[in-house]
Image (cartoon, rainbow, N blue to C red; front, side, top):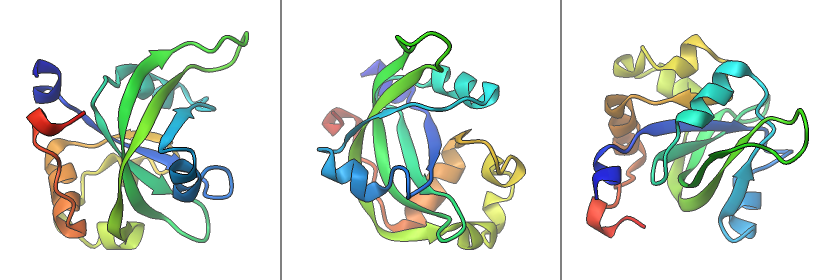
Length: 150
């Protein structure tokens, strides 16, 4: 129970042509989140704990939007391949009833301090609880109660 009370929130970016929400769902909702090379993004991956929740964000030129939510299933571990960055494992929680675009988020004054806007190239972004809750409110996502969370 203590883990859930200390739950943190994140945003994971992915190019839909490489790994999309459809890929995530088709894979039984499970994936290894790897290939993150930026030092700050790796630091963020290392900070993730089991049961943390993450926005699943499609980046790229066609769609810049949050499309779903995943949960950290396995904390950071090193790659078995020499010189390759470490990774976490995540599982699908739910697709959003409706995606929320980068433009729509930028239009929300209360989201102005979101690191997604200040560090647009960072692929793993911490999400403060207040920003998480506001985005969830906009997209009509109800976070499971801690005792019901997996």
